[in-house]
Image (tube, rainbow, N blue to C red):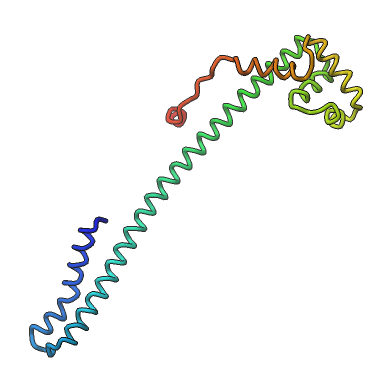
Length: 184
């Protein structure tokens, strides 16, 4: 609410609330003393201030409701975008997982070698892999050597780099603008 409008409403409220006192003084029903006038004006000003406070609070509540509606709308849109992002990421990860499995098949890895190669790609140490698979670190090391030999790679770094390089040099996937995503 603008300041000028607030002042206008305040002046109108004071005049409206002071009207009975003015009428009382004008008709001569009450003695016209400075103290009487001051008391009547003070009452009128107090009531006008209370009325302005109520109007101000009403306006504030209205603004807060508008802000809340806007925030709720933004939250809904953001949640929808987040769900879409997660779904896209899930699809991309599934596609990457399929491509990795296809390459493991091309290298003719056994099921155990595929499992160990996957854990190596996740960054697990030979000891961690042995604990997960309930085997010995020596067995895991031997299977890792078989993985590197079959793939023609030197070690875990080259294995990870092989797939990371493929991901980083994959054709760009166009991001779907939020506005478009919400209309689908």
